[in-house]
Length: 180
Image 1 (cartoon, rainbow, N blue to C red):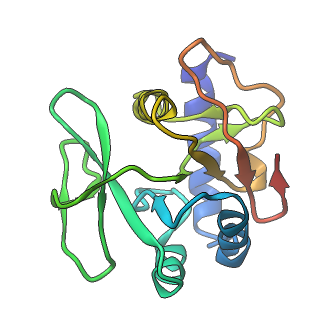
Image 2 (tube, rainbow, N blue to C red; image 1 turned 120 degrees about the horizontal axis):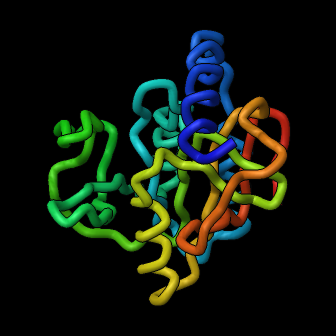
């Protein structure tokens, strides 16, 4: 199956699971961040559609004095992260995704990344825009960023088709285990 076909198939399955409200434990994610991250700057995503919610995680990170940030996609289709707190307003971008208003730009030391599918080699199938892959490529030149993918266990497939632009995760956390 090619990436397009996989995205379509997994999206359909994920929408059924989304109604079940299965979650990945925030404590598991925070523990991993505390062990692996060189500082307290975390880049997250605001949940969209059937993505796993990160709202409880954001709340817990803020309570532990982490600096959280969300991505903004600019006119050149480049992604950057900006500091954000749960009580601050968001705006809707051209893709229908909520983004913070431009504030203080942050270079996260940890990224929490959504995905449609993954494999045991820590390859991630995203949505096809390449935003995270390009961002990771850019920041890896500046600092070592811990890349944590969030998924449910059913999203694991035998092999994600990859190309030279695709970036592996350092960890993938599901409701059942941590892949590393």
